[in-house]
Length: 446
Image (cartoon, rainbow, N blue to C red; front, side, top):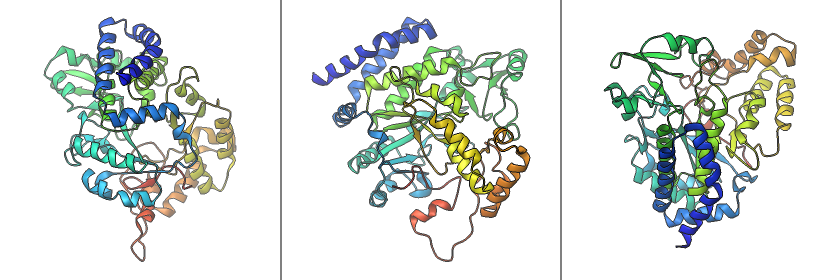
């Protein structure tokens, strides 16, 4: 009874704001009632162990800001083969003094074209090649005993074109066709193309893909097999939130919400950083605070520092708990390559000017290529972007030829081969062997 009262108390705190935001965005009372019902059911399904963690974290809400936080990112298959085998390597992870483990996308995905797991076929199920939901639940339990929080990616912007929603849309189901942005001809797509930048202009040009099964154009911001979700449809928000709560009940403590600035689409805009994005993230934050307050949101927001503060919300109405410190990572490497710290200093000055509620994950590298941010070079360094880019690329090529060839944009590249070692490397030293698919430190070593 006491635990139900805890949920009721947390829900009462947020009920009015959640209702106001949902109704302002969707004008759909039935959808709100479904969301509230899913929240209650997820809370009831949450284990006693996780509810105890919720209580402890509620009493210590800044637990993730401690200076001893240290983590790494890894691909399950490359590190251990599957989730069961990864659990057996827990002594090694404890030896590294980890408090945070980010496993790269492991939800069910199509093969072979899945963008490294960022084309998701089922948001509720572990990919069979890596294990089962039970394996994931067992792993999170053992990690918690070791004081390690598990982070998983949650791809908010799109599904795989083979997701059951997409397959139903292809079969002509109007309910699921409304989950995506579909058009009979090029009239609307051509209007979007006038203002929406292309993410991968060289490898995936254009923002729309023709679907022969439906005879419709589909909005595909990233790759042609990644269909953008229509968050103007309340059913999309409710279903995606339900999946996040399901994963939280399996023991996931941190969600890296992928490509969150892209999730709202509006003609005549860049479809980036729109106000409705913040409404959605704020609602998601409130849902988590009601159902599973031990869980936090880490935003992937690859934008200029001036765009970042909005993703934290305000101290009174917070959104993301933390963001990746992308610009510092990029400018550290740029400073090393160019032997010039001016751009790094300018970026850090801009970062330090942000409000106190802005909190960042400092990291050395991740799975994405380094985007050099050339637009600021001419302003800060009084040098042409092309000259500085050449310096950075040449420097990276000296470390790894494959990295240097394609370290100039945001596209994902294959893992470059690093120079061979005279003797086998210890496991932690293997972090530097691959920049795309390997284990990489997330926070700096304490």
